[in-house]
Length: 237
View 1 (tube, one colour):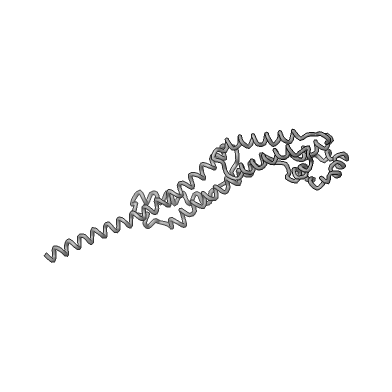
View 2 (cartoon, rainbow, N blue to C red; view 1 turned 180 degrees about the vertical axis):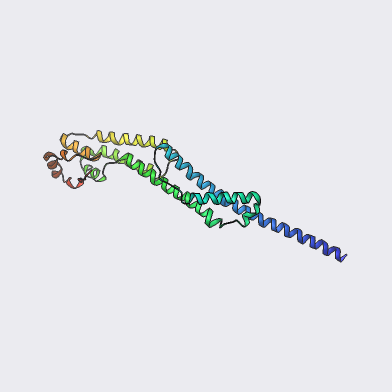
């Protein structure tokens, strides 16, 4: 009877060890599942954003680092798992530092490149007027209403450029609307009491820049009398 009990105990111990080993293996699978799910989600989001930006016409200069080497590691791991899933407990390379962490770094770099490209595209598309010019002109009652509208548009454009949009095409349409309002506000600047030459010079400065020929004696005198000379700068195109 004592021998039977010992045999039963040995069987139970063996079963327990099998269960324990299975639980340990299952924990490895759970850990890898969490790691790969996280990586897949981050890479998926990054790829979607890059695709949307490129399709919308906002160029993104991004090439993932060591993409070939990581693709080779992924192929190796897939082949090994197909032969024996338990290889996830002892992979052929450092799974975290040499694979998972590097994929996460690629996703982060893609996100950084995307926001940089989007901001640059918005800035180039907007070509907003100088804040110094707006500050100077806001001292003149004739310009205050239009300048308030212009500044409101500038704030909205800055907000729009702050994050990569979920729908770049819709964001581009919104940007066009803001720029239309911005430009309309410039065109509505009243010329009451302001010489046409001065108004033409100011509007040109607020756009792509004024040719030096527009800086006539009349314009210089008008700006000097109102202490507005320091609001303008001459640059070589």
